[in-house]
Image 1 (cartoon, each protein chain N blue to C red):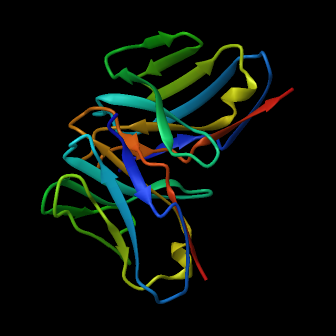
Image 2: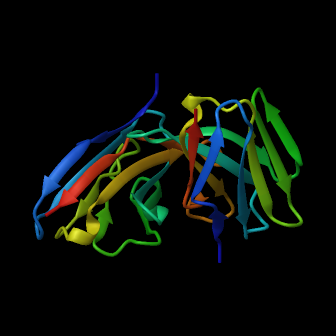
Length: 110
Length: 111
């Protein structure tokens, strides 16, 4: 069945890079997504990558996809306090929309 | 601007009562979803709909029902609320393989 795994917490110092990792199981996923959830709010799409791509860069965000290992990562360069949030990895492929990981809480240390 | 709105944003109810959470989107999306978010479980799919008069069960559908009488709305009903249904509920919509848009969430407490 489909399952998306990610670490629950990541703590980084302000100004450092954050790397959030995710593994998925559905090799038929067409897209893979990263969503961001700030406290008290809904999820917002941060970025996505087509399954036939290896990398996507968007300003401070870099997404790396290793299809062979079914591994997805999100790198946030120069992490700021405003990046503090829960980050969800998600995959498509099923008839029921997206399958989400449990979310990684990104904690920023001053 | 098009949007997706949920109401109420916060609700406290008692065990056994019927509760309905509203979801309204103005994108004219065919696909609508209800998720619940719980610590340690992430988001879990409750019900979803691919269009008017279409409803489908998700991973955790027991105790919940939905109806789709028009494109814009997918209300979620808890027929007899239980304490285990205390959670934050998110409605979402999308068209085809496009971006999934989320509402701001409805926090439900069942006492």
